[in-house]
Image (cartoon, rainbow, N blue to C red; front, top):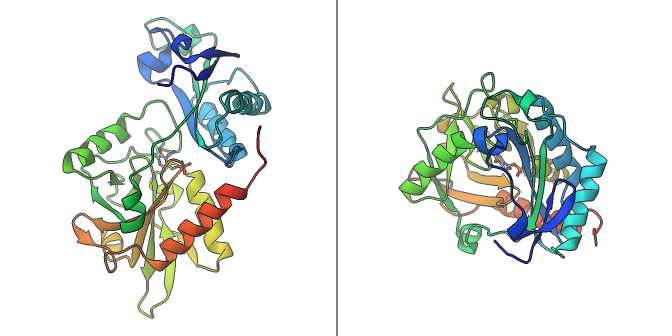
Length: 298
Ligand code: PMP
């Protein structure tokens, strides 16, 4: 933690060491709340509206009424980024259910807690972007959308953390999670894409659909848009492990990760074991987009 940082807490900017939330906050007691992770590039907040919209959709899904409008939250976030002079960094925005009692009843929490942190970010090591990442499939299944929908970016990330622990123990930085049908859903904190080649040699970019039980990633959406612009055919399709292992290329997308080539899955080489040309094209297009889109906030 950088003690110099100013944290937005319930309407005020406070020094980081004073930014404290009660142990009775249901975000802490039950993981009852929602959040977003957003990037700042060249003083611009990347796809801020899309992140705000997802935050408010997540809040709606858990019956949490944010204590301010989306427009007010946007201003508060921009103010936090500007106050900390974050030119390139990461924003964590949180609405928790708020201070309550020891029971589950959210009616005992009259006011949601709002937190906005704007700080630096650590990426995966640079080698991963040049040489590709090694990932595994983990035993932990992604939660079923009809039980606890992965589309909700809730403060309860235990499903993802259990997967993350499995891959850390296996010595790899990220993992593929299957859904209850045994099809590919997403990674512990990223979405996944492959380049599929059909029997006639035609290439198609494929990613699991939202119905596979995924968080609908903002980076995923940006990459789909870029691929369409570049004339690469894209499809949201259910993917099996067979499809993944036989992919010509694979990569992950996420706000923190950006676009990461994947060259090994479950100890199998993907394509020729090097980051592929379509992945490279999309990495470059994404880097250009994120550096130029939007207006500086300070
Ligand atoms: N899936 C999960 C489970 C995530 O936590 C994230 C990161 N927010 C993503 C996918 C990627 O989403 P985005 O591109 O919006 O960061």
